[in-house]
Picture 1: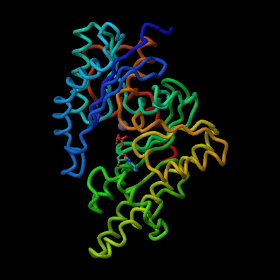
Picture 2: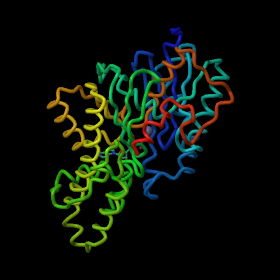
Picture 3: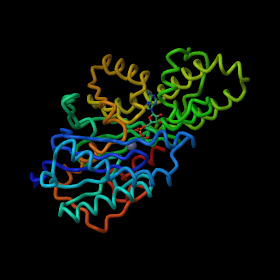
Picture 4: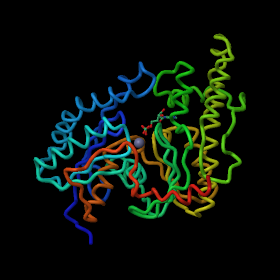
Length: 358
Ligand code: KG4
Ligand code: ZN
């Protein structure tokens, strides 16, 4: 039985280094979503420092909440429930969101629910606002989530019905791009800079390996590629590197993107799905978008790539799956705890099929 009381949900996302608060309607309409990113704070360290991330969440979260309520001119009376990411992620970061959600639920007597961050990414294409309009996506679909923390393929059949088809066995694609960018001295996160520099380079200049190319499964691997690229960079002197950096970026990016497309295409053949979703920060990559669009057009597939604000970590996606779960009667209570990994009985943790193919 659907409980249609849950029309508007306030959502909190703090699983990594982005603090995000949103108000979302249960049909996917985003009333408001504000995200405070911490890129500048972590930049000197070349990666996210967990302790610094959680400290910044504590500084940012309440002002951000005030800002969302002020901007929308909404009161707590108009909010029907609360959703919060409580897994997987950095434990200190998650804790800030979870404690905030539990406190708000107690103060304002609102039902609330803990959400799996990865599930939230999967349903992001249903989000829309005045700017984006509705995407028209429908279940079932094949989803590739590709970001600094994730590289996974899912068979998405409906709410709560997901099967993981493949995943990275080591680094995430974004993580590999960021590490490569760091070696080239491009700062953190380097993915977008690699993308920009690749446009000026020749992708056939270096023959980087496409790992797992010949494997029968749908898993990815980026650490071999990353090591090969780092070795190549280290073998060049300063002036060679200066001359070659555009070609290196183009060749490295081509290998990452080819590996993503290879497994996406194989997964599409296996599932036969016409609806394809690509989401996560790396979805901003211009070469990935170009190849995916070309492939979809050629094969008569419907490709959905949520606009970047809903691709990267955001509370709107948490609010939407939260609304759907609250409507289904799911509730968390004050014992809700953060968890660094997905839970044993989580939605996609039926890994037996996956393990057989490893
Ligand atoms: O989804 P996201 O904001 O955060 C998580 O990691 O969950 O994704 C961030 C990742 C970073 O690795 C960043 O370098 C990468 O997305 N990224 C890109 C581009 N823009 C962001 N990678 C390649 N090309 C881009 N244009
Ligand atoms: Zn994420």
